[in-house]
Structures are given as C-alpha cells and as structure tokens.
Length: 323
Image (tube, rainbow, N blue to C red):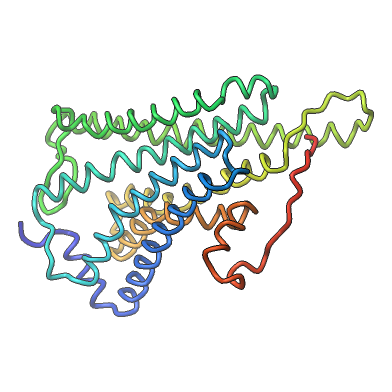
C-alpha cells in the first residue's frame, strides 16, 4: 500500500520530540485510565448495593462501550507512535478497525441519549409514571435495543450499503460508491439527532424544571404546596451525566471543527492528529467524572488505591430534597 497519511503524520510527530513525548504519554495514560476506570465502574455498580438502581444499568452499559472503544482505538495509535516499523496498511486491517470502532462508538452516543431521556423523565414526570417507564425490564430492553441497533448499523456495509477501504492513501468510506454517501449520511443523522437535538434538549428541560421548582419552593413554604421529592443521590447522578455529556461534546467539537474546515483551510497536521486522539480518548475520562461527583463511586474506587489519592471524601446524606 505504501506510506499512507498515518505514516506521514507520525513521522511528522517523531521529528518534534516534545509533541511526540506528550502524545505518547497522553495515549498510554488514557489507555490505562480507560481500561481500569471503566472496568472499576462496572464492578462498582454490580457490587455496591446502593448503586443497583435501574438508571445505573445505563451507566454500566455505557462503561462497557467506553472500555471497548478504548481497547479498539488507543492501543493501535500507541503502537504506531512507538513502533513505526510495524505496518497496518492492509485492506483487512482497514475494514476491521472501522467495523470495530463503529458499533462501540455508536453505542456510546446512543447510551448518552438514552441517559438524557431517563433524567428528563425522572425530573419532569410523576414518580409512579417514571417507575413504570423505567423499570428494570423496560430499561434492560432499551439497553439491549441500543446494542442490537449498533450491530445492525455496523453490518450494513457487509450487505452492500456502504463500502470501506483505502481511498488513495487513506482508510475511509469509498466515496465513489453512492451507497457509502447514504451510509455516512445515516451515521451523521444518528450523531446529529443524539448530540445536537435529543440530549441537549432533554438536559435543558431538566435544568429549567429544577430552576422553576426551586423558585416555587422558595416562594411558597406552606405545607399545602404540592412538591415532588427526589433523593439527593438521584440529583447527584443527574448532574453527573450532564457533566459527562458536556465533556463528550467538548472533546469532539475540536475534531469535528478541524475536520470540516480542513476542506477549505490548510489545518496543521499535528492539530488534526491531536484533536482526533482527544476525541477518541474521551471515553477514558468518564470514570474520573463518576469518582469526582458521586460518593459511592469515589468510596468504591478508593478501596483500590491509596487513601491519599482521594483526599476529598465528601459525606452525602441520602435524604430527600424538595424541588
């Protein structure tokens, strides 16, 4: 196949020792963080009785997708950085890497969307209605549906709807095939409706509901006022998943921006590469968000590490707050 774009970019980085060192340390760190953090997240939810709630089924399934994404993408980047003599310029590797990346990244995006809808129903619907909509069976069915849909999306090119291969020296969808354009449009619509429409709208409505409820509660202190009670833990989880979604958007926005503008501007190679690595490594940091915002995750994680790594052990009383 000859030298492709990956090889040219990596040779560019090796000519810049500072950039090469920073990228190597960052990629290696995120691989370790992603594998250990997401694995501990799954273990914590399974082992901690207080976390065995239906909404955390979504968190555990998201951690599976994040862990798989980390294993599929970042080790390959690290190997290409450290061992440039190894070549991956084969058709089977191109097709295999794309087919492995799409289902897990699609599942992660759809999980974030489902989590946003879950939080919206929790905050805006009566408790009995929420329990009916998000029982264990309904939640499990939705999670299974996400994985089935992600698998179907991945298998479409195998039946002729889209084609993956080397176009010139770049591993990508072959644009000369009209079905590839439709397949890319399908992927774009999935990401767009999830990250631009459904998830942001749900979280904005949740914030509005919380703000309005707090205003009403402060204005009317009478006991006759109808107020809805939510456990503090549920509100903590709501804030946690909002922060997760915000970090996901922030990590992917530079990559999307540089990718779009590269068609019109001469974007530096090192900038395009760094934004791509940052976007792919975003799934490694969710465990950090869990530990920083949720006392149950923080307490469980602290058992595996020295206590001085977790100096801020905030005590949270699982009482009810009125909103």
